[in-house]
Length: 450
Length: 60
Image 1: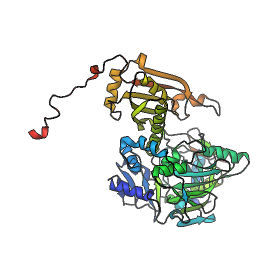
Image 2 (image 1 turned 90 degrees about the vertical axis):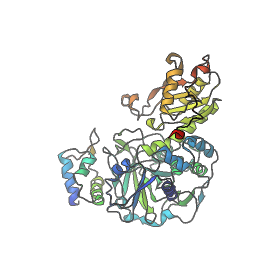
Image 3 (image 1 turned 135 degrees about the horizontal axis):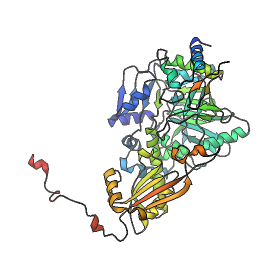
Image 4 (image 1 turned 60 degrees about the vertical axis):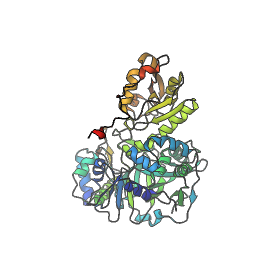
């Protein structure tokens, strides 16, 4: 049995003092508001109307909890992700699995038997937000991603398949043949598995092997009961079914997006469920939007930034994708700079996916301290020389400032990107940046005078 | 159609409502029962959406 699982992670959070347990009865309509107010991850032990079920939320809604999942310090997350993702480990198949302790097929399939939460004020219905979704294409093999599901009926959900993704590509190929696409949805897996699933890997790259690399052990998979697909054996809950060949015709949303904005109604396919399996005494995972999504995005963006800097022959010291820009739209990095490399670093980081603004500093700046960043920008930047604007770059529809509603159907938006080189300018003596230090600070201690 | 689904249908024929407004009007109903009734409306495919994302049903 694998060392890492959803429940072992809950134990890790507990040991770190990062898990709150709520034992009073809670209605599904109260879960989201309560979870959002807690300073810790939360386990709801008593769900009204759902005996035997528990609900866990906000498991990685802070960088500290993500560090617990990664098994490293907060400022090493990107470097750990980069190193471990370079050593993928293929999954293994097991014959029996906790996720199949209870099986509901055919007429017994009933989503209303699962404690589905109503999460945000303007959501179009209850959502399953934290999914590890498996699909397969005859040519390209298995693929894993994270897709939200909106409750429709006891046997159907909507699924957001609007953005380009491998599953969308697989679905389109099935749709072209007039066939449904079989998919399996696992809920309640280790955050490292979610991290691998959310990684935008090239289509022939195995997210399952990436999950193994991040774990340092193979991910154990078990064959589905009704599909020729495999799911993580350790999952709490699995939905087996198919995306109906109806194209993008069913209303789905709004849902609280990872951009921290309430979305709008989208037109999407329908997921019809043929089988539900789960553990005995299962735990439903309610991924808290946007924070858990954003913190899961951050290491992927940071690792891409590190890779871009190394390709540009710039030596990174630290990097972070701030949660304020959803772990996705900005990067801040410190580097060991040689002449000209501030600009090289800015150019490299602006090339990362949809990163929209970047700041690059020298390695004497603590990029996790906003006051340090302000100081660097105030005294090391001349806007006419150190601000770089890149026009006409690829953007995401979800960013309101790109005005995607002005585009025709299927149109892709573009954006301008901003980079700030906040390294010490060439030609300015470093001694001019000598920081204030109190006389005797290293040897005179306040506690000796108390 | 269940009595609760009938009530939901009547209300949404009268005016468009956000999903949370529909939920707020039936807080006394156990959540699984509410979801089953909502599912009944979905199954007969009568729910429409307006520009704000609110649900409504066209009265025939």
